[in-house]
Amino acid sequence: MVFSSLLFIFRFLPITLIIYYLAPKKLKNLALFIASLVFYSWGEVRYFPVMVVLILVNYITAILIEKYRKNYLIRRTMLFIGIFVSLGMLFVFKYSDFLINNFNSLFGIDIPHINLTLPLGISFYTFQTMSYTIDVYRGKVKLQKNIISLGTYVVMFPQLIAGPIVRYSDVSKELESRTITLENLESGIEDFILGLGRKVLIANNVGQLWSEIEKIGVGTISTGLAWLGILAFSLQIYFDFSGYSQMAIGMGKMLGFNFPKNFDNPYQSRSVTEFWRRWHMTLSSWFREYLYFPLGGSRLGNRRTIINLFIVWSLTGLWHGASWNFVFWGIYFFVLLVIEKSGFINFLNKHRIISYIYMFIVILVGWALFSITDFSLLGEFLKRMFIPTMLNSTGFTVDIVYYLRNYAVILAIGFILTTPLTTFAYTKLSEKKALKSIFLLLILFLSVAYLVDSTFNPFLYFRF
Image (cartoon, rainbow, N blue to C red):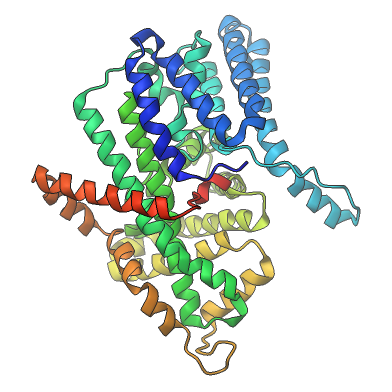
């Protein structure tokens, strides 16, 4: 069963919080661990053993790394085993059929597909288990001898299935001792409601435009509708993912944890370099810390820096999905980053208007590469974007007028919410507590009403 019900998350949270708050301090990790396992098993019970194996392997290898810290060979071997098992699990479930497809195409053979369903959240929790083992190896964090505490870190339900990617060092102290204050509880509830509204009221509604365009077919849309559609997808994926991240951060605060920020107004960026400092910040940080720097980063000269960037961004693309379009999406950003590092970013920094126009085009083309996995359809869509056509399949109708009439309001609201104006307005609103409370209750009411009326509320990043 693919877990996709946001309504289940909404119902699960109050019960979990009550049990968690009533549990004695020494048993809070156990209560959270069990609740998280129930949460995960509700959506993907058959892959429960996968998560248990990953916890056990990384728990044991970390213990042996610490025990044999002075023995380089054993310590290195244990690190290799921990990483190999974590990445091996990810590869088997996420990339085995992708590899089989490529072998079949390359050699003209017919190896049958394994057809494994992707375990919920595996792309996120494998990175988290690896960060723990690697940091123990490096001596950056203390060994966690309590398997329940380590298990709690790995399976903690707020960020388990779609991030943010929480490194063990981010929460190691809070796993040992944490205090739940009324201020944090209020802040957590506020973040949860705002994230819920971003997902339910904005992402779900603006995403319907992109869904309609997918249904009518790329070959029957005008240039205007192609741009309008990919704009809708860009808003959908932003509010969908940032909404869940904000909900996760809010739930974390309610439990006494401070998860790292994952988004920082990315659509206000004036360069690709800046964009990737603001978008999915925990993933960028993970690749930088555990891949880019170990490869040598930018310390070994320009040629090696370019090679390192190519490796990182190819794998960043592949992390998002087992399809070549994701790889090319990563390489696309690699090329743009290299161009900017070569001096173009200085030009962008000096010309504000041009930089915003550049980023508008660059990001929308990037999301086209990301969202369309079929290369023939992708080629046709890009053609529609850049070779002007005002006609659809009827030969005379300007289709963009119809969709603008239906979606102009939600698109405008979504666009405004990506600007600093929203932050400024909400800061002013927060100065009047009564008005802020009414505003949050209104968002909560509308979101719940929408959830009750809707039967399907998947998060886009659940599939990655």
